Image 1 (cartoon, rainbow, N blue to C red):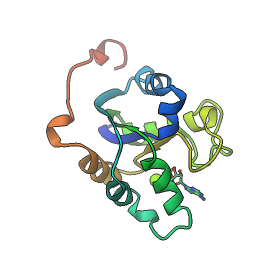
Image 2 (cartoon, rainbow, N blue to C red; image 1 turned 90 degrees about the vertical axis):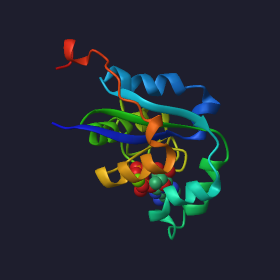
Image 3 (cartoon, rainbow, N blue to C red; image 1 turned 135 degrees about the horizontal axis):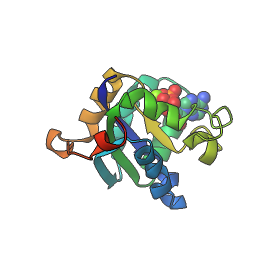
Length: 150
Ligand SMILES: Nc1ncnc2c1ncn2[C@@H]1O[C@H](COP(=O)(O)OP(=O)(O)O)[C@@H](O)[C@H]1O
Ligand SMILES: [Mg+2]
């Protein structure tokens, strides 16, 4: 078991559909903790850096257009095994393949608009948190988890 921090980002459709609270509450109910949270429109260059591993893929410009086309919610989520746990709660990349009960399985229809991004490894988490947040914006605080989770 390891306490980890991961980066997650709610894509613009979540703001349009007004389901920000529903999505974030899934992480809270699981016992994970919001360590940083911001609503913003991200510049194209930052979005391209974030998705740099996909820059040669055919869907790259459609993805960047979508994610920069409206506000997103950027977050750092922390907790036990947060990186893999958050990925599991999000579900498979393609909403059609994402299991019911996962965020993408329950709210997604189209792969570009698959509701949420989440870091896929410790290296990605560290890189992405640094891209979107200053060190002092990521906050550790007690939640009393040990009384009911540990
Ligand atoms: N074949 C595809 N066609 C269109 N968009 C895609 C495709 N594959 C991935 N994407 C988009 O690019 C994002 C990043 O892809 P990837 O890193 O493979 O998935 P994940 O977000 O699950 O880590 C996905 O969340 C999705 O919105
Ligand atoms: Mg990815």
